[in-house]
Length: 403
Image (cartoon, rainbow, N blue to C red; front, side):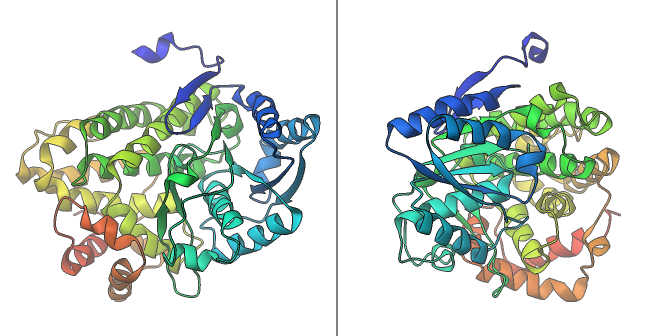
């Protein structure tokens, strides 16, 4: 297998739309990035992060030193929570404007990076709010420069044009996608991820699996998206069980991180549909719900629903976690059960009922799927018609384990 020929301590440059510095020790590249920012006239930045991971991982030590070495002033918004809100984005934006920041450095997983992307837009559109951005009241064509320092191996947001935020007042959790929010530079250093907990390791990796399952089966899926899906799932299947047993092993983190990067590029190309469209209402209603866990609870039912339409593709890409599928439409129930069995085996046995959802919630969740801005676009490219009845059935099938 090709992994044996890789030196994980070598920092490689991976070019997608974003320039990514990848590998153990890649965080040291922040010095070069800071120098380039200064050369381009950026003398002040806002650093967007969660409350503690940016320091606990050691990332901040490198960033602070690089900013000081290059005479770049900074202010830190360190209040981003999981499932970030439009209110937090507005708060961070006000801080950036008052300080006179000219660029954004986002340190964290999907939540801080998505928040940073949103702030970067609003720094250029000074009369707009995050609610307006996420309700599509305007179409941004520019954003302040973004540097993403990734601390998880799941979202892939460091390499794509997507961002997500929750409007708590409306229980909306829309997604935006604009070319102007591709980060200029990203850093993917697996050494920064060795402090992730077991559950964080599981949920972020399952997020990557969902990205590619959807991207490979949407109505706009390309051979590229399918190729990325096959490798992403193979890597997660191989390295996730090892990582949860040895959380501080940088080699296991390296390949999970690479899988996540592939997943981020994959859905930048093939986009997303059912599991993300249906999960967003779950964590909008329950912001404490981990996005990856929500996806895990939905995935088997989504596989079952879409398998007849994409049997050959799913049998191929799911082979590492659902072996033996022949790619025929009559295997839909079997495919769902095999994926659920894999999730249970790696340590994620929860279903929606375990997280407090019940059949009485389904109507509201379905309504949010069809009224939350942007989710209709995801449902429109699902491989089967996304009627309210189909969506409701997926939710109901996700309440309990497969029979």
